[in-house]
Image (cartoon, rainbow over all chains, first blue to last red; front, side, top):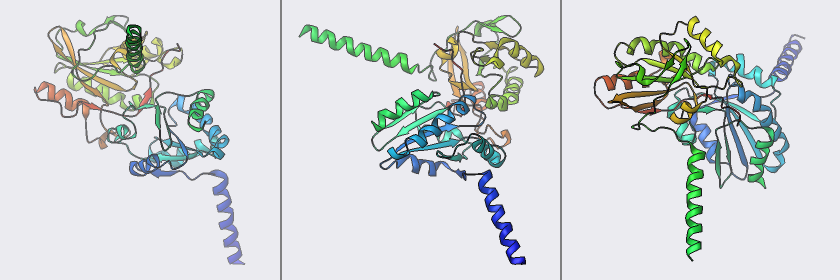
Length: 162
Length: 205
C-alpha cells in the first residue's frame, strides 16, 4: 500500500510537471549554439534571438511558432534563443513560453553574459540589437536585424524552401 | 559598345549607391563626429560645441523603456560623476519614436531625468537623424568623442561594460577604460565592443 501511494505521488508530480512545462528549456553556452548553427544538415534552420523584456521580440514570437508548426514537414526547424538572465529561467522564461503556447519551436537559453565575446561570431552584421534572426541552410546564412511581420517571415522562409 | 559601357557604369553606381543607403554603417572609430543641436529636457538646445571646456564627451544613446538601458542607468550616472570633472561629461540621447514607444516621449523623459536626478543633459533626437548618422542601432550604445580643435573624433563605440546583469561581475569596463586612456594620452585597448540591447524604435516610413 505504501509503495503504491509513493508511485501514485510520483505519477501525479510527473503529470503536473508536464502540464506546467510542456517544453524543457535547456541552458546552453556559445559552443553548443555554434554546433547547431554550423550543422543545419538538410534542414532549414530559423534561429531567432529574443528576450522576455524585448517588446518587439515578444510580438513576433507567435509568428515563429506558427511557421515552425506549418513548415515542419518541409524540414524547417525553429530555434528560439532566449537572452534572458539564466537566473530567470524558472521564474520568468519557462512560464512565459507556456503562456505564449510555444510548443513546436524549440526554446533554449543562451547563458553568455559577455556579449562582445560571441556576437561577432554569430554574425559580424549583428550590432547586438534585438530582435535578431538567422535563416540558415547548408548553402546560405542570412541575417535580419529587425522584427518580422508574419507575412514577411513567411516570404523570407519561402526563398529558402522554394 | 559605348552604350553598353555606359549601362555598366550606371548599373555599378546604382549597386554601390544601393549598398550604401541600405547599410547605413554609421561611424567607425577615428572618424569625425557630426555636431548636433538637440532639445534637452530643460527646453534648451544642446550641442557638442556648447560646452567649450570639455575635452570630449561620453554620448549615450539610451531611453526610458529598455530594460538593458535601465540596468545601466546608474552606471551612466556614475560615469558622469567620475568623468565630468575630468573633462568628459555624459550627454544622453533618446532616439526612440514616441509614437511607437510612448514611454519615451518628451514628458516621460523630463520626468525620468528629474526623478533620477540626472546630472547630465537628456536630449531628444526627434528626427532620429543623429542616431542614424552616428550608427546607433540599440540602447544603450556609447560613443566617446574627443575634441580635436573645432572637431570631435570618435574614439570608442559600443557597450558600457561586459556584464549588463551584474556590474560587480563586469571584468571589462569598456567606457571607463577608454576615457581613462584618453586622459592619459594612451591608446584605447578595446575601441569597440558589442552588446545586446533594445533596437531603436524607428519611425514607420
